Image (cartoon, rainbow, N blue to C red; front, side, top):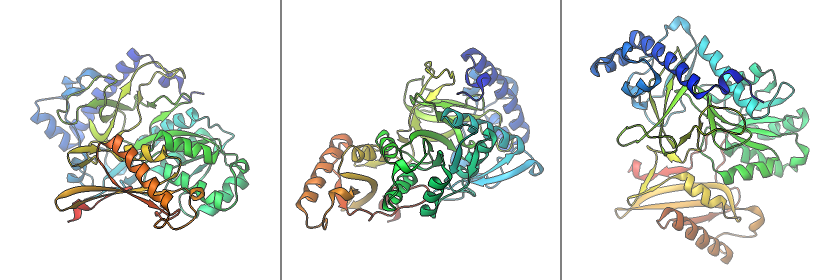
Length: 436
């Protein structure tokens, strides 16, 4: 099923023409309403009249996370306060949070785009859908919630926490769809198994997972344990929230709602545009946003884009899975390491559970990387410090990681349940080099 055939199956020529018109209108809007962009454009000797087609987007300045922090809280807001109906804030890492204001039109666009995602996942009016993202300043909960309501399905705003109650609701209400982080989905599966609930007791058939990196092996793990089909859902608060892109039933990349969010791939070092099919940094321009529109926002996510036809019939370009980030990439002894690489290796080893942590440190001026991973309960029958099989497993994991990462990590096998579970985004990396 396709929710909006007019926009989701538009010809490439018509889409680019629409994007060009919307870009020109957007540039005029921010030029007259956002001093930050007006100053940037004047410094580059650019006026709105210079933007005549979508190809002219390369003339425009980039926007970074630091720009949002420097203009905290409302410096990049284009709409007057009287038109802002909702304010979200990023779940942020360091420094000031990112404040994003939404107009009524923004909320309507968000709901429309999220409904496109849900329809691609096979969710319809007869479904009961649990939203297990956090509600509040994080965009996940309300973003998916409004999309479910716009679709006409029944939404259950479970949020995170109280996992046992959530599982009872899934079984008692016959919930058929769920949205949450991949790590929380695994936490649900683990809790469900402890409660004696099997996937045959559930009616779950579709899950929308995002807000943190995950791999194909993690997808298979979730599908196997919850008995559903797991789809990727991508978004970021600065651009809109969940709904920016979504997988269809073909699951060969995530379709971008490019009539609202124009994507580019750039070289993160030279900032030059890269052709489709090349891996680089993902950049978005919010073509229709009126609350806090952004020009060429550098997401720092690394992926590629393709405009090859998709068997599902949608013509919107597709983005690959995120392979890492250009700014939180770990550099260990001169070698680039992405957490997703570590996860992919761990989940390919049958004895390893999908719960792990990466600790980076510096000892005697030498960077070290330690990977802590739980052993699966069925593989564990004693203390990890005394079992020879544990030692052999550590050697096995270390060997696999070294072949992929090109460096030799320290591997620590942990008892089942010993690595902390969280309800929201899981922080898998602790870099002790930054706090010494």
